[in-house]
Each structure stands twice: as structure tokens, then as C-alpha cells.
Amino acid sequence: MIAASRVGALVFTVADLARTERFYRDSLGLDIARQPGEAHTGGDFLMATLPGDMLLIFFQGDARPGSSPVVVFSVDGGIDRTVEALAARGVSIVTPVSEAPGGWSADFADPDGHVLSLYQEGAR
Image 1 (cartoon, rainbow, N blue to C red):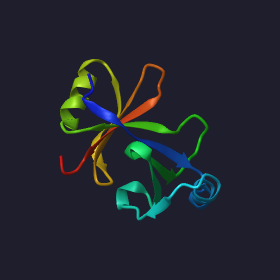
Image 2 (cartoon, helix red, strand yellow):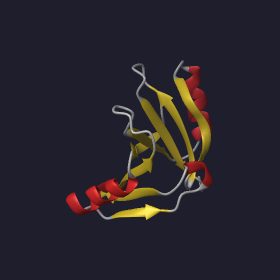
Image 3 (cartoon, rainbow, N blue to C red):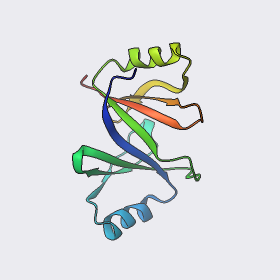
Image 4 (cartoon, rainbow, N blue to C red):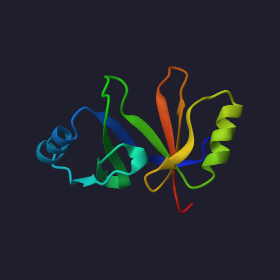
């Protein structure tokens, strides 16, 4: 069982970051902020916080229909052990534990190939 404390984020891949920023800010009224990208993220990204501390995160990239959003489960610690346990249960690990903005993440797939993600803050 995943020791996920909650769904912490929905991560979208979008074709045009500026267009997405305008839509979510001007049409939906969200307080959306451009964040500086790090080398491993591929550039700037957008982030908005919804009630309940749910994050919406937008990266620019190949925005194929059905490829996003990715549901991100927050874990309070032990991301390495959690991924090892998933693999031991036969779960397909898409991306092993790797550095992510402010912490660590890993991706895995459900039986239909939908990618799900785990995220652990770096301080944990």
C-alpha cells in the first residue's frame, strides 16, 4: 500500500505556457505564478495553489491528448521504500526515484497505462 498522505498535485503538460497562464489567470481567476525552471525541469513552469493546498503545475512540452494531467500523490517520507514495494508487487515503474523541484519524485503506471506519480519534499 502506498503511504500517500493525499493527492498533492495535478501536473499538466501544455503546448504554450504563456497561453495557459493567460487562460488560468484571466478566464478562471486563479493566482498563477511563473516559477523559474531548473536544469532537470526543462525550463520555467507555472504553479497555482487551490483550496486544500492542491497544486496545479504546468510544464511546456508535447501536449498529446490523454497524456496529462498526471496525478501526484504526496508521501511524507520513504519514497525509495515505497517504489521498491510497488515494483515488488509487479507495478510498472515508469521513472525511478529522481530529483524534482524541491524534492524527489517517481512515476508508475496503473494496469491501463495511466501514469501516476509520487512526490516527497526534499526535507523528508
